Image (cartoon, rainbow, N blue to C red):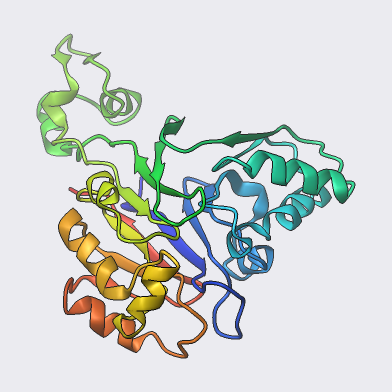
Length: 308
């Protein structure tokens, strides 16, 4: 297993409308040959291609809210999956109205599904629990039903001590694999060896929090506590605080304050208004509050490590 197994692909970091430098919101998380998609703005299909990610690898899609810049790429993406003869199931989560929007759009465009599609309206709590990860959601503060998401990767076993295994008489091969999976084994000499005898402390699973569009939210501080990465709305700078307050978005400085309170490892500023040709001011403003931050451009990728 490689250390850098979780990649966060910023397919689109703009907000409101597409621009020549930023696509609408869409972020893909890839690991172990699968992809989870958070929001699906216009042009997500093209951005997936540019990032080298196949739509067929997407297992679940998480929509933050039903403003057009976050969801209008969804019908086209599903249509592409149909054209590519998808057979694997797909699950879509989003706030109330997501199921109705998706079903009406697919019906109106005469889409004929050849794969299982489940659409679930959610607002709070654990919504997906898989072998490798779980996803929780909580209400965001945005004037319409809106959601923030927290992705938690499963913990993985600690580092395998090959020297200790040699001392205990555990040969290379299936017996070591069983120990790595947490199973007790018996060596050829009849010695009982437990996983704790050869494994270091478990490596804590990576956690990624996605704010969606939101005003500063103290509930998100709790949900994102000590996350590996917080991807947060930074639509405006403090020079346009009045707009941020009026439309229930966050400034870069406010996003940084949330990151600081939550003690996250890194902050990524997204949903940048098209009024800004550069994110330099966003980054300077945020770094004055929380130094470990960046404003990714479209198609940038952040790789995350499990802790040792």
